[in-house]
Length: 182
Image (cartoon, rainbow, N blue to C red; front, side, top):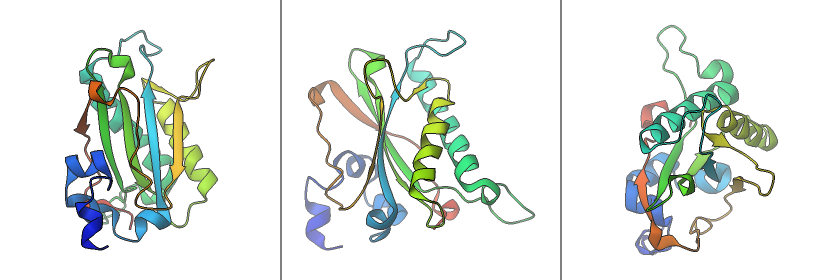
């Protein structure tokens, strides 16, 4: 990666502002375009048990998603065996908090697909894990609530949405370096 990529404001905008130089260390220079996926995860206002979405429940919901995703996609590699460490899918995420309506909060994440997993199965695992969390939603009657895009260039991630000034980015826990699948 050359110096101009990291200095450019369009380079992974929200992620760089939250993670800084740690981002390249987690995602690697060439792995992002070979195995990277950019996803947007949205929330429903109420869980099946009737619990209302609050700021305090967003992080536990995200952590539950990670656990379910790793279990489904990595299967036995995710389980701890003897003294080997558990492997996890590399992921970084940013929560976009809306200033007025919590139901407009959403997550943007970058995940790296393990090379041995088929692309369709990987996307299926992401959807499976998200909709089995308390507040995860994939579709409504009127619109698709889940986006997953293969990353072909480091410049693909600058996303734009209408009322950007009403959102503020907050970092989510990312995969620890020593647990990354790669």
